[in-house]
Amino acid sequence: MSELKLKKLLELNNRLKEQLDMPRLTVSDASQALIKYVKTTKDYLVPSVWGTVDKKEDPYGPVGGPCACTIA
Image (cartoon, helix red, strand yellow):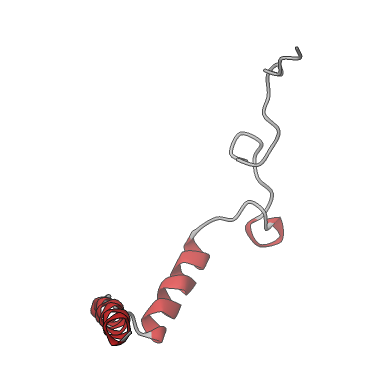
């Protein structure tokens, strides 16, 4: 029984060491990166901020051309 407990504790210790070695960011750096991304990345789903989108540029717009559906 004690060998099983020791094995579980060693596995937990190894997982915690792996988490400790993960690279970290400060909250302020992560916030600045998020603000920069939001200000520079155009979001086609928010036209009130970015304006209307030309149909050629709209990735969410209807696709032109015939339907490629097959009914069997």
